[in-house]
Image 1 (cartoon, one colour):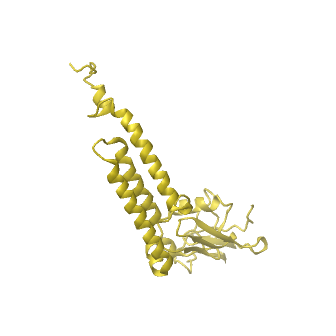
Image 2: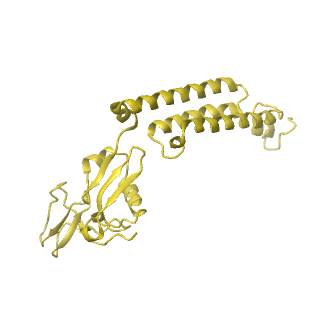
Length: 236
């Protein structure tokens, strides 16, 4: 019976080391140290923007570097020199693409995309919003983290190419009625309007003073579910 095999048939040496010997642990430490320094130097060469707000292109570069660094750390049959060649190629390619982006605006839009308006004058830009991989709940959470409680506080919200949301607010005296976005605000939507008040379409945020009626159709999105609008000021 194997020296490190227990009564359950587990061979601990194979479980812990795979097919390698105990001596490979010291080599793993050395490989990890080398690749860690290579990653650190590479990120430094990419510049500060490569570490902070990443575009899709920059994220691909970081993932590529991480993949090239990971295997040589713990696979004995993966040499360090091929990994260094991969790093050199990725950084060179990044530098070339960055240069072309700086020279050609159309190429920049192709690679990184551009800013997209998601809210304008307190109402969703529906067509733009549909194109973005961004759920409503996720978006509302982003707004709430910036102290937004209803869409009438927002003059314009823009999703930048980095994925961050830039918000331009109305002055307090200019805040309008808008769709409330606090948790549970949309749970009690209605179709039949039983009292005159400002209501917001729960689909697009269109807000209007509605009168008593069995049904009102939103002129912006043609939906007919509403909630009472809010005109709360933003607390910063």
